[in-house]
Image (cartoon, rainbow, N blue to C red; front, top):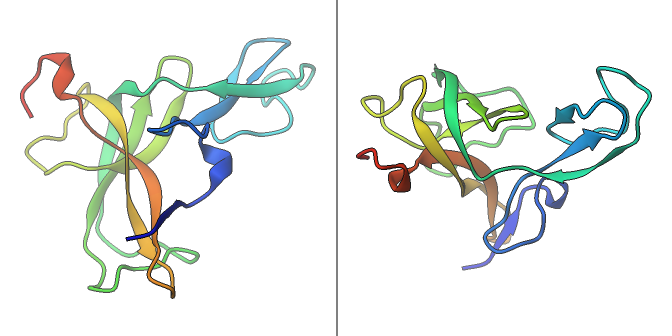
Length: 141
């Protein structure tokens, strides 16, 4: 089975991939996804900044209806999923949360993963980023 990442600009090219944001040289503000100017001071140069692979759920909700385009539902139809903000220290990242309802809670330690977003016409699985419970943190999954 062939796979590809949904947007190479979101990742650092390592295996497994890490998310890459940007850090301002002037004030140190970190953003994700990357952008060309600092939203805080607009004075510094923004440079690539790899983000931690572990964080904590800051807030979450259930995505109970299909998102607007360019979202593509899976071949077997839309199924609700959890989304949330993950606190990675310097930045909050909005992401899919790959876990069941009983598992998800504010403060839950999570780890970066990739999950299928959709399948291209040629059968390639297109992967996006998500977070799952971090079993290495000492908490049970």
